[in-house]
Image (cartoon, rainbow, N blue to C red; front, top):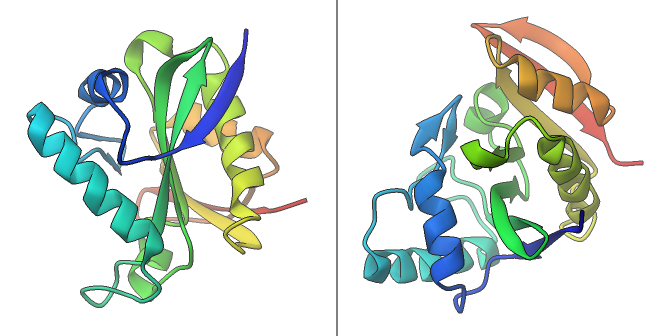
Length: 168
């Protein structure tokens, strides 16, 4: 099995579009705003996501810059992840630095664990020293993935685990 991640590109095509249609629009707090878009709207979405990764300041009082990544397994996209470059007060309370999703047909095979490990490594290029994940209490799979990647539970509050991962 060959696994790799790639950074979003405005040239991403049909394979990424189809993968994004497989990732739910909102599952366990992970927002996929590309789900349900037409192909033309998706291409515009890519441009916006690329611009977001290049911004250097907070927008709307809480939105931090974030870089989007795709997880590939054997040359096929199977996951969607994001790393926020820094945290605002709102993101400290709900959101964190890292979010990811694996398409339903590729779950329960260790891809989430591998994806998070790769995202942690990518965070170095963004200058992020430690990463916060906020994981809903009922999402036991994501909790296990975070802990397997060196996550430490800071607290459990309002139905969420607050887990910090320090880059090694």
